Length: 333
View 1 (cartoon, rainbow, N blue to C red):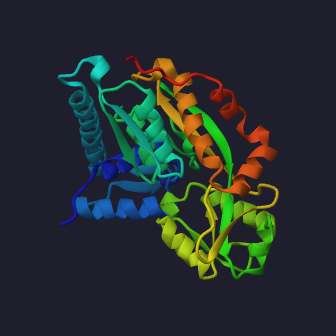
View 2 (cartoon, rainbow, N blue to C red):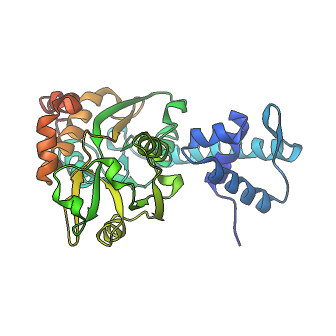
């Protein structure tokens, strides 16, 4: 039998606090239809309507007000429980370090950097495909730093005691079939991909859904989104079969598909570092950024095409270059 989950409680509270489903969807980094469907599921579980539409937005019903009050208590208690569990019985210097990240090509290198250079009794990782979920870990003090692709609506989140810093404005490359005549080109015009089927993440996990559509429409077409895929190998297999998908620039060509840059860097996506200023790394945020910079730079040369782009666009990674000259955090012997 389906049960209420913490994500349901966060959704209810967000709608109540924002006063509308659309604003709450932006805050949570999901689409409005996805949040509306989730709300309907929650109401079925609870057995009653939680919000009513009005000229002033979404107004909680009497049942809704009761549920929201209880949800806030549960979320606050859960955050306190987790914070206590993490620190109880440990000296401050012995607390584990929690790194939250989406799986990007430099995630493994990032973990290795922190294991090598940051003093902590234990390094834990939380890997999730959702940027909003990772940011929630930071806000709830369940993670000390997070690295993910900036998601649409993130600027509307209210954040306290955290620093958000862009690592790099990462250009988006594409994966297409080796049999496609466009594969012979060193760069591809986005407009030339208008007739292909697109492979994209599901709407609630697509960090650049609106920007991608707007960019395509600016060059004269609406992308024909045929496949929603969360797993990279499946996306590349569909590209080999004749579709097209966006790809991280350090990706390498494989069996039946090639990775090519979009001419003029038509699409870029900021990769960001979020550090808790009240956590163990708050006073060493510049050194932390140096670790992240070294980890990111280590994967640039995986794809010679990206290495070439990197050399030709120094303006895109000024902060990374500066951070490479900084010392990594030192590990006491």
